[in-house]
Length: 123
Image 1 (cartoon, rainbow, N blue to C red):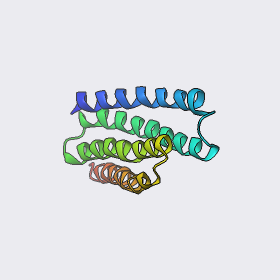
Image 2 (cartoon, helix red, strand yellow):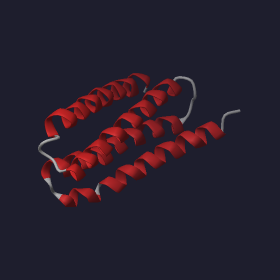
Image 3 (cartoon, rainbow, N blue to C red):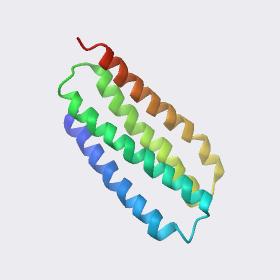
Image 4 (tube, rainbow, N blue to C red):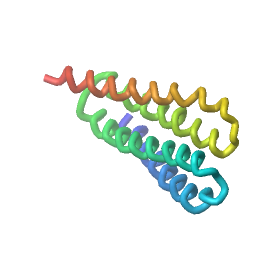
């Protein structure tokens, strides 16, 4: 799992920086201020949870058990659902895509909860 989480963190970090630059330079004249802010929210959450995923990658080698793995999986799913839905919403204008976003937020919460429980169980 260490390699997988590190690769996911690298991918999400790379794409997060790229999408942030794309928004700042390529979308600023094409999207409304509201949609640009929504896109930036997706980038922010992607990059924050990329760092969390990087932390999980380092922890998975140190702390045995499924909770750390579930935290990493939840963070990855959260990035895809939360940030991905915001990107698609702003680029397509299909507002119904916003219904997916809360599921991504829920996945982020599950990830943090799993991480917290794993920390609580440490001796």
